[in-house]
Image (cartoon, rainbow, N blue to C red):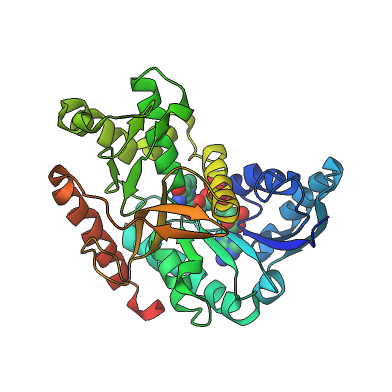
Amino acid sequence: MKKPVNVVITGAAGNIAYSAIFRVASGQMLGNDQPVNLKLIDIEPAMNALKGVMYELEDCAFPLLNSITTTYDLNQGFEECDYALLIGAKPRMKGMERKDLLKDNGKIFKPQGQAINNVANKNVKILVVGNPANTNALIAMHNAPSIDPKQFTSMMRLDHDRSIAQIANKYETNINEVKKVIVWGNHSNTQVPDLSYTEVSGKNIKEIINDPWYTNDFIPRIQNRGAEIIEARGLSSAASAANAAITHMRDWAQGSNDWLSIGQISNGNSYGISENLMFSFPSLCSNGSYERIADVNMSDVLNDYIKITEQELIQERDSVLDLL
Ligand code: NAX
């Protein structure tokens, strides 16, 4: 058996975490031979609910679950952290502007970044899920100067997987037949799902970009899928978000053959995207790290879309400069 690793999950008493925690403990994220110490963080008023989650975890008798810690103390939670799923954030309330949400949630990610900087292991892998995920990840990253910025990522995997599923539906094929999907930019309704390189059963489907289905149906469907789920379910996506978080971290830790969309620091990119943004780029994962794919020729059709998502991220960043 390998030595246990420390996995932190914030927002651990919330909905997404409830779908994620048990899968992490069962080995679906880090493998069937990797024991884990689960460090579950939430705010103080949620500690009782979190105790209930801990009892249920115990009752599953997971062989890979070495220990469970529940806490609202960030330094205790992040101590020697190897993997962090930063899920906890406030939902947008009625009448709240996006910039208000940014301010409120940004204040959560500054102290978390500081705690990671001070007590986490230096090779820690961090995934930010709590919205606005990209800019929250940027805030955490700026507050952890001793950690390589590349170790901070934001979750675009749900958007990526939603795209794969819609294409598999369209071509009436299996999910495994769909490869090389890209989602650029922000996890918001400005994100840009791109099929320029996508293959279905080994055949490039680039021509679909000129089909009205692509701009009139596909792009808006993916951009607004979160709202579509809230409309139908009365609640935001939880199980699918948890699945995306687990597969993002699994592929980062264990590698993947397919292209993935990963929100990452834009510094040094070859696409002319402004620096100092958490922007989603096509990436490949192997040997416990990810690399941005540098030579994708973006279709001209997408230039305007890319500018919009980049501009949104610049505005988000500029509204939280005091937290960076
Ligand atoms: P819930 O409201 O069910 O749970 C959030 C949990 O976070 C609560 O238990 C709350 O007490 C906790 N929390 C609040 N402040 C905290 C803090 N300072 N430290 C630790 N925990 C704290 O929300 P849930 O449905 O789980 O969603 C969580 C976040 O994921 C939201 O911001 C949501 O918008 C975001 N999402 C992100 C997605 C993505 O693809 N990046 C998709 C799904 C989801 O919308």
